[in-house]
Length: 369
Ligand SMILES: [Mn+2]
Image 1 (cartoon, helix red, strand yellow):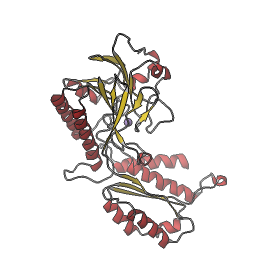
Image 2: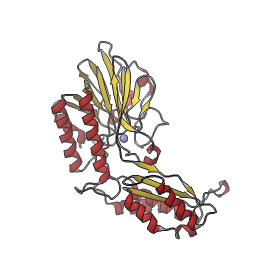
Image 3: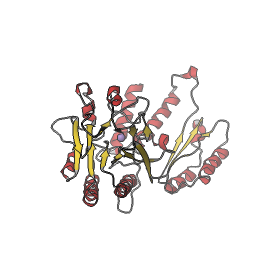
Image 4: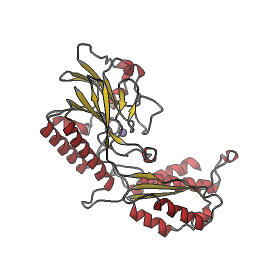
């Protein structure tokens, strides 16, 4: 008996301004391409059960394109493979009010797909008993009694939350009580943390299928993919998926350097790596304000045209310990950094970017005056 464990698809995720030939945001298209590749691979693996451990969508109300495409892909996947599928809701698609439904309920209408959005539920899939803990159920975890049932051949726990407080890349996840994990499960399929991790015994995070976290640079080197687990032989195989190339270029230290040297270092970093169509960051630290304005921005724009996204991050001279209160100039740089962050932060398509950035900066101003 084999299961496949997918998590954190974040379908509908959008970032940067670039669109493809069909007018779709390139990153949204990337995430869907990877999802399709995952489903194709799973079709060839033919597991007995597919588990999707939450955050199918990036937001609670994804755009129509994302919803329709996901419905079509899941429907076709089940129709051609017949692989039973269980999905739980993650924090990204969970709704807080009782009068609005979770978008995932739509997929529960596909024959062969079962969805658990609110309360903890136990589902049987042949010989496999799956205890499901969607995000909302973990908010009231004290009342849950979910022990494995020894009558069942295999006991699997699927949850969306934080298993280890040191592994967090997304705010808003629920903590998973340690005693749930200590029970005698044959497999624990976790969602929420975006990297592939073995958390001891048979507890795993599959990780996201693409780089959709707030800080993608931490994940630049990590492979993305999903897990195939053999319940009989207790063996896990990680299947990597192709993703958009993400490159965090070596940080340049501007201290005691001339503008000519800096422009050349910035160019050299690009020469040494192929940044074509990649997501790229170049940080320059200890950069005095006076030099920042003199940098060759035409060159930087060339790189911005070459890459899918070339993020140039100039950072002013770093603070020494006795300077922990920001001066007026440093406060200026905090605004710039915040503005850059708000501009690149993934937001729901129905939110106006300019209003979002302005609101954020207004809050910052209120907090810092
Ligand atoms: Mn997630």
